[in-house]
Length: 397
Image 1: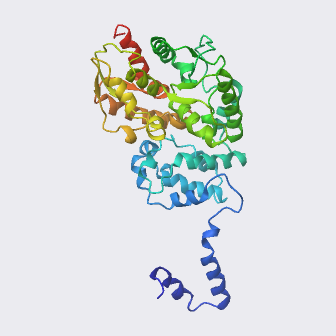
Image 2: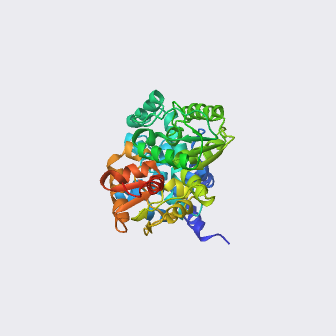
Image 3: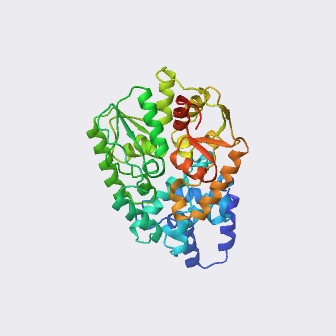
């Protein structure tokens, strides 16, 4: 018995000529192939199409859609436009720019039955945009800046050039630019733990922004350099304050042919280990604090309990939890270079998250230098490492 969903075809063709019937049935049966680009793409088109045809329920947790109120930037909406771009049906500048309206927070993945990350799918689409030489000007400028300076931001902090130690402390672009307090806190923690640690004299970006924006060739240049320098350091463990650096070293480098032969830890993993082993002992920190889970740390690395264990181990600190936490955290607005390509949207996301957190406590604590910088523009925000270092001092600023 013919399925009802195909019965209309029989009825529609019953009075058509033979040539029309043959042509229609050929196109009907081959329709799926017609949806795919005729050229080879970096984008996973099977996944793009599945996402584009999905009911798009994940959109209700998409911070970009919530900020812009435009269905075109919803997860599935972006994939529909991506499909049109990849098949040559849509080539306008506005359409291409929409491919950069994503903060790569992976909130969509938490709800996706296919386990898709739209942020990851967009990397392939952006790679194809790079190949087609249609990259938006502001995105090209980011690549040029990275290639010229080897960091995302202007360096304002120069580490003292420690070259020997079992631990290499990889600061990351934001610490080198705006996070001197985090670097000094980590130095205090390493010293309290009796650790000899090294830093890179001329630290390059880990390359994650380049990969995220589709500049795969340039990413490999950065990854090769950083992996080589880590190998030359002779360290056994790399400790990162930035969750994106930690994720890149732990997951992206091995996936792209640049595996590190060392242990990689996020700073909160290292601090939690030192506390568990009794190597460092925090003092009092008499404050009520709310913890913000960074997206990459919680969703891509699965690190949610270590920061909490560290904070709960500090006498006097009263830890508060926001409604949206752990895997269901909300983005700070600075993920995926969104604040560089679409600063207005990013600031709207930041403001909403700040308001959510401040409902629970005036003092916000996080475990990501970029989140700290974003949320700290108009309030009191600390990195977990800063709280630990302060507690080992006099417990107050």
